[in-house]
Image 1 (tube, rainbow, N blue to C red):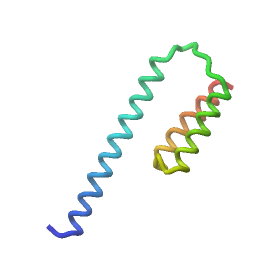
Image 2 (cartoon, helix red, strand yellow):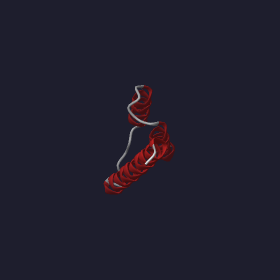
Image 3 (cartoon, helix red, strand yellow):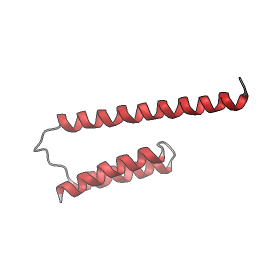
Length: 83
């Protein structure tokens, strides 16, 4: 097997693993959201603190851009929902 072919297979395998992990994280978040009490009040400052922590994680390189965008969208949606 050529080196280029092997590298391509490795990249594809890594991409599929990341996609599977992302799907699993989304499912976990959905389950957490569904299990949360429907009348549970969330403070705006708490949501903004979560957003700031998310930005800090991204700046530190702890999460990838796609995961950052997904999480940011969910947090900002919660912020819009309480308004």
